[in-house]
Amino acid sequence: MDDHRRIAAAAAALALTLSGCGAATTAAVTGGTGASSTTGTAPESATEQLVANVRSGIIRVQTTTCGEVFVGTGFLIGPRLVATVEHVVDGAAAIVLKRNGKPLGSAKVIGEDPARDLALLETKEPLSGYRFKLASRSPRLAEQVVALGFPFGLPLTVTQGSVSGLGRSIPIENVTRRELVQTDAALNPGNSGGPLLATDTGQVIGLVDLGTEANGTSFAVSAKVAGPLLHAWRVAPQTVPLDSCGGLPTASGNLASGSSSRYGYVQAVARIIGNSAAVRKQLIAAVAEARSNPGAAQSAVARVVAARRIELSLAEGMSVPTGSARLQNLLVSAFSLSLRSDTLYQRWIDTGSSGALSSAQANDARTSAAKSRFLTRYNGLRRQVGLGPVGANFRF
Image 1 (spheres, rainbow, N blue to C red):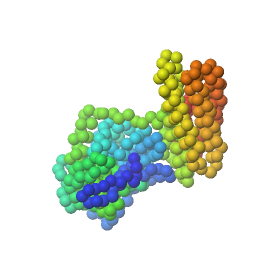
Image 2: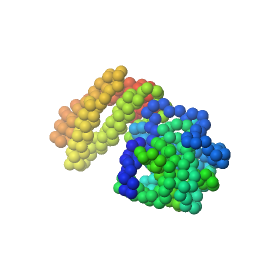
Image 3: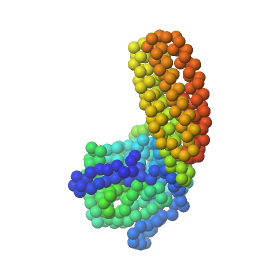
Image 4: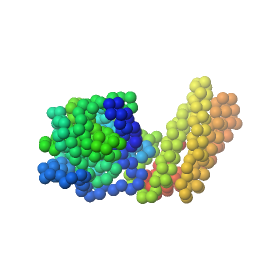
């Protein structure tokens, strides 16, 4: 979910960027009142009426990954169904839907196609609002279109333009997306997943997909491509599991203003201890296997020690925000003690030394105490930047 992924358009040799994973909320971004703003020239009354009719069906899609919070756009196609593009929800640990700045509830992915960049979300409870129809006809060159979404995490925003190209094929990460609709409507990060509407019918002719660094060129997934896939997922849902983040709590999205450096540090620590939790499970499995399958246990504990050395090195090399030196020292101390336990268990598994086993078990108690002190202070910093605490039962 990278705001600045570059793609090469062979025909036009344009540098393209994904525009929907967009708006990472590393600073406070409010939902606002939901009042729409319109760029460009004043819209005709018919377009104003169209926007007024459909705006209740535009959904703000807030995706929490294991490292950041992103904003994209979706739209209702059923009482519990929200259409969007796949890169908006790629790597999601949690998906929250909002309208007019107010949460509507969480959602799960019941269909995704990364190659065509499409996804269908399902909510637990039905949502009110306008339900969009996908056009069955092909768009026409120069026909007028309007796009609705949340560029840069702003409140609902409306832009207008025309269809400037049809049937475009764009290579993205070694996969060629075909039948894209080209438009000159101004689209930006956060717009992705929103509808591109024909102004005469109000039907969806495309789902906003790509913006470019070239003024006046953006792309949308054609309704002809999207329609059959969305229908298939509606009939036969294919639920996509959310990322577990190693058992860590995910971001709330309420990041305090001015805390970006602390937020980045907190998330970097979360990734390290999340990986460490997985390594700890490998150690437990190696210890349990030591007597029944010593060869496998030796290989497993060797991998554990190697991984722990990398974790300690990463912890020692982190950029630490002002005021967090004590927390950083606790983190490094905890990983140092973990590495000592790991190497002692390795010696026991390799040599059968009962002394090494006793020393490892005694060191485990010191390690546990150090990690507890670290988590207490770490949770304090997590609360400062708007994140939930790591549970007392989290083991890394």
